[in-house]
Each structure stands twice: as C-alpha cells, then as structure tokens.
Image (cartoon, rainbow, N blue to C red):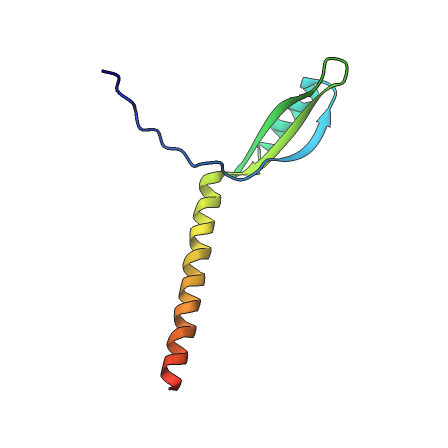
Length: 93
C-alpha cells in the first residue's frame, strides 16, 4: 500500500510582479540578492524568452504567510464593523 504524506500548501498565493529584466543571469542574481535583504519579501529569477531572444526576469512578492495573516485580520475587522452596524439598527427600533 502506498502512503501519502499530508503537505501544507498555501494555495496559489499572491501573484509575482516583474521588477526588472536583465540579459545575463549574473545581473539578475545580483538584483535578486539586493531585494532579498528586505524582510517579508520573496524574490526569484525566471528565465524567459526563446533561444535568440533570451533574458532573465526578476520577480518579487510578499510572503504568502504574511499576506494570509493580513487578509484574516481584514476579514475580522470587516465582520466586526458589520455586526456593530447591525446592532445599531436593531437598537433604533
């Protein structure tokens, strides 16, 4: 019997934004390392283009775990706001 391990995934996560395109990997890698110094930021180098038109794109996004926590906080605040508004309407009657 084959056992499957449960893995923790965060789904798709936030989309990546291209911050620069470079002709060589070394230039792209130096930009990526510069961006990785910032906290809660993910960066990657992505090879793009065809054989004759080759370049390397540097992409960034905020950490998905941090983004998920921020989204949960926003949802809680919105829920509290709606409940407060609903209770206010009920008291007027």
